[in-house]
Length: 416
Ligand SMILES: [Zn+2]
Ligand SMILES: [Zn+2]
Image 1 (cartoon, rainbow, N blue to C red):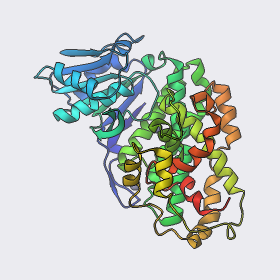
Image 2 (cartoon, rainbow, N blue to C red; image 1 turned 90 degrees about the vertical axis):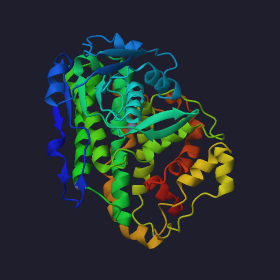
Image 3 (cartoon, protein in one colour; image 1 turned 45 degrees about the vertical axis):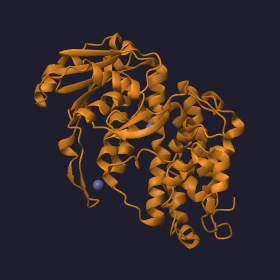
């Protein structure tokens, strides 16, 4: 399978001109054996340095791309942080003109940050289907101990070798499935915001993301068997979703209330008092089932006229008590131009029938949990090391981690 930017770039029916920086993504078994051919096809010349960690360097079935320099990082305590990027930049030969990331999301974010620093392109070779961020234009870093979005560059080219990806530990692929199933609620949140306020919406980008979810929904039951076709389709779905974000210029199509639940767990607010080592996609999968349950319960309300009230953002004292002094300044800064400003109870009442229709497109919580059970994926908060009694806190405060309109945020306008 090949996703070609030439078909996606340019004027769109939504009225905008979309730009995708990644020129192509090729998802095939054995694609790394043709590394040289693809690089010359896309005119990517010059001395290369390939970046690995020791696990991915020895990954089963991996045909290592030929490179003038190889940097192999120690996988123990490896994070996309000052230490990893510092090591790559320090060790890098002066004449390197192209970086090649071979590995996980961490290797990709480290490489993408270094490529940005040096102003050189990079080629992505994912070795696991764990996340949809391989094509991201920003680096998801841990900086000074905090999760932070830092500058980066999108890969020029993605070469995803299914022969390698299908051999990666299964929990990584299941996390990838979770990340993609999260698009059900993410897309619903986007469409709801569009219905309520006329927020910009692009049917082409929505369609791409929906294709990604459909592809993964269809194949996911074959993923635990490491079926090569299913692994190829999962990787395709992840890359397609990532490229849809590139076209959009932000994560709107791919990240809604389910991701906010995952982000809140990662932030470790004081009152939540949790520390989870679960993978991004595992947390998103659980967040999706939670959000689906809340949304479908809301959709049971046919008439909200007696329940609707003006939106009020949580007060500073309340946020201080929940987040603690370490996090509260960033949360207040994030929400200083509240996305709910201007949304009136009348607007919500008027949009409600449409909102109910949008919710009906999301699989129910029961359907999702049955699917997770069959896949052997993480299902509950306790599966991701979060005590079940934290549910209410997650529902109340997760919408405050990003200033983005979601039904979880809108829910504060309803007495339910
Ligand atoms: Zn468009
Ligand atoms: Zn995600």
